[in-house]
Structure formats: C-alpha cells, structure tokens
Amino acid sequence: MPTMWLSDSQKIGVAFCSGGGFFLIGGVLLFFDRSMLAMGNILFLIGLTIIIGPSKTALFFARKQKLKGTAAFFAGLLLILFRWPLTGFLIELYGIMVLFGDFLGTIASFARNAPVVGPYIGMAVDRAGLGMRNSELPV
Image (cartoon, rainbow, N blue to C red):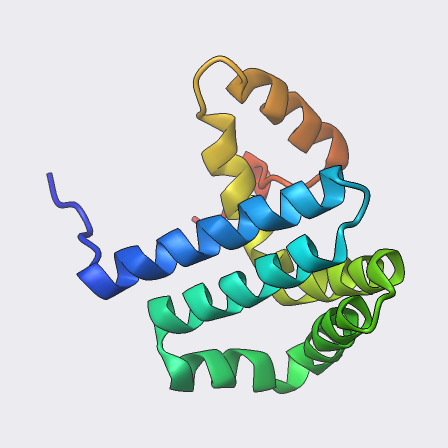
C-alpha cells in the first residue's frame, strides 16, 4: 500500500502550522487576545512556507484570482498587530475563506471519517453545504 512520506522539513512545517492553529483557537477563546492571534498567524505563515517552499508560497498568495483574499488576510493581520483584534480577525477570516475555500470540501470529507465525532461533523457539513455529493464528483 503506497503512502506519502513527508520530509523532515515538511514535518517541521506541519508542526508550525498546527501550532499556529492552536494559537489562533486559543486567541479566539481568550476573547481575541491580540498576541495569541498574531503568533498564530506568524506560525501558520512560517509553516506554510516550510511545507511548500518560499517560491510556491509567494505564487500562492500572488495568484490573480486570490488577490482579494491575500489583501484581506494581510490587512487583517496588520489590524491585529495595530490593536484591532476583533475587526482584524473577521477581515482575516474572510481572506482565509477566499484563499483556502477550495480545500474546505477536502477537509470536510477528511473530518467526516474521524472516529466518534465523524457522523456529527458529516451532518454539519451536509447542512452547511461544504462537502461534495456523489452527483458533483468529477468521475
């Protein structure tokens, strides 16, 4: 059974991205703590750069169809750094949805297979309309 192996640097990148996600969640849970949100964003960007490389990261953020998302993401990051954490987070969230919206279906189908909570996540995904249905599959 073939499996995809990550290099050591990609494993470090995944660790940085995961840490960034935990800091973002912690920042939201602590009523939009500015320092935790900023640290989460910085760790996420470092991890993404380590995983896919600096040139591919720059190309990802510079794609013409993603410029609105890139501008919103970095404007939100700047607002967080300039002491407007709630407004910055909401603008940044819009940017994340534009930038990474293509991956939501993949993430939803992965989460659907999680033990114990998978069926509940599946029901929520179906209600929100994020997952691919069989009629939409490109086969």
